[in-house]
Image 1: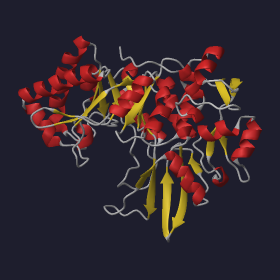
Image 2 (image 1 turned 90 degrees about the horizontal axis):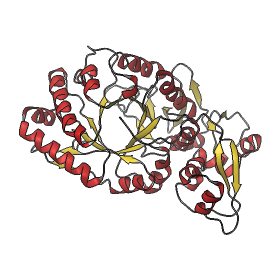
Image 3 (image 1 turned 60 degrees about the vertical axis):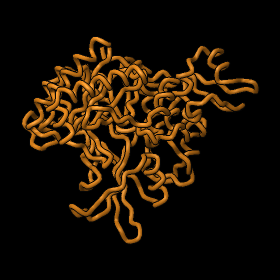
Image 4 (image 1 turned 180 degrees about the horizontal axis):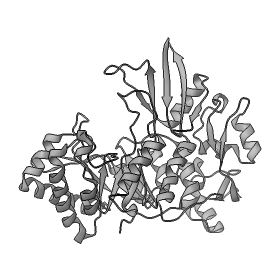
Length: 427
């Protein structure tokens, strides 16, 4: 359940009100400064249906055996463990909690190679799959691999599948249309690239491929679909599924190079699954606004469902915030990206009250620093819950997060309440 802080509320008073251990409440909400919690901060409160108090000599493994509770569930139910095995006498472990925990919903997301190992270990028990960002390729078709060993090893330990992510992103952090067009024009380059992908799948034990070519424009839409079809024909006999990321369109003829290169119907027929990139309405260089307002997200989804079966669709979920400066000046203003846990710390530091936009289903707060006005749009359990509810409402495959490289403890606790752990499978 959710608890929005009112004036005078503290983490201690909330823990007492709901009769939950303070340690568990703080961990579930990423609270590191309980003395400076902002009014309006929405906490998720997990209520246990069964608990175990750690005694001297206990280990997490002995507790799992004695209580017939899988290790993965102990990690999911107790975020203060951070995916580790260390327990201490007096700790209260939640063996199970109230909540729907719907089965069959696949949850995954992206992670940069620099993601701290501790954050990876905390996150993996909640995921069906993780997607290291990103593989690129050269003009001769050979792969450029990320340093994703830590992500893969953490995923393997917790039984989470890893996917190979292929994009045209360059070292300058831009998508190269020229590189994509070289690929589309050269059969030799395509064969080299696909051969390299297949070899990497076997070498690194990846479970499938996720392709994300952006800003292709209308002139490349057909060639992109042809490349995806060729890739799928090579992957399918070997049992590797193909996932494709789609720009957030609301109609077939939506203008703009980001949208025109993605033919929803053609790609939906080729791919085993698609990701709707339903985020970034509020973005680094844009005007202050919610990152993933519920209305626009729903409109993209409803259009997609006219072209692609629901069970092929992963909903894209943003899991970060933007700190916008005011007034916004087009071409000059640049928002700062920040982790959700850091957004809460910032609100507390600035003594800012958090508000909730009921139309967009998004939280925000304002503050002034050194004479400059700011507004921060971010996510909380209420905003995430509103979008995650679309999975059940429309019968979707699941959700993929952009991204799990920043801390958002409340989101993990929410996932633990809403969904059972489900293995990755696109068949």
